[in-house]
Length: 271
Image (tube, rainbow, N blue to C red; front, side):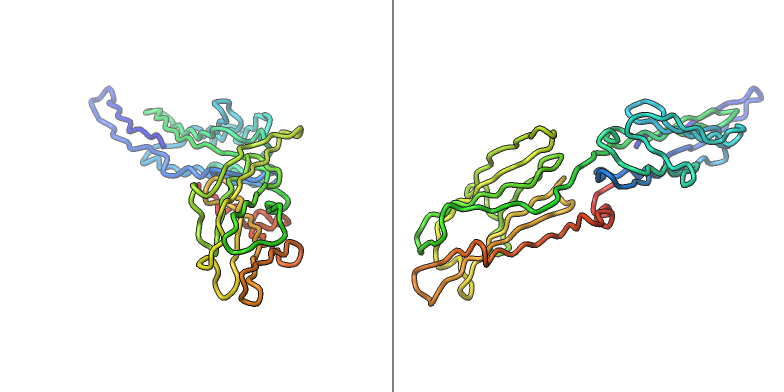
């Protein structure tokens, strides 16, 4: 956030020391396509009067609030900016529908009136994501294993934008990079992205707890935001050395992100 302190000396030798500043700029670091977003710009004018508040996306003005003007609210349409003026005011801009074009750098600029004409501003970046409609897929070339076998499982994310970050877990513990192989990102004809990561492990008795082992692949976005996971279970049968991998019966799907109401997860995105 950028702010400035304005000093003004009048012709009579009086000194005006004003601390005009933007106290808070709330712009989500990531927003979901199709949902709404509230942008908030809070400011402290000290003893000065507000002249105008301007909002910019990528340095192009899209909204202006000028309290002394006959037309206080002015909206300048541009791609990705769909403002609901009934829910927008001197501090808040309400975007009705987020699109891919909504991604960019958002700036709030606050200017005061005479005699000081102070101007302060703050800038934040907003990314836009298309969430997948399902969890990642886990595949294997075998239906059964024995203790001591080397096992390779592959996790492939559903299409999204940007590509999901994939992580493997065994019994809820993260797997080290040495036991995985990242296959990179594939971009399809719809410009959506699919990521893939393999897990390599050697089956040993220590990996099983009370006769079973759970292996999970998680797809996440921007580190800590919405997570979608898929889990499989390996069962130790009759305490023998044979372990059966029941792909159709024992897959457990855990979808933390419900796409029917993605707004409830927007608060997970850091501002």
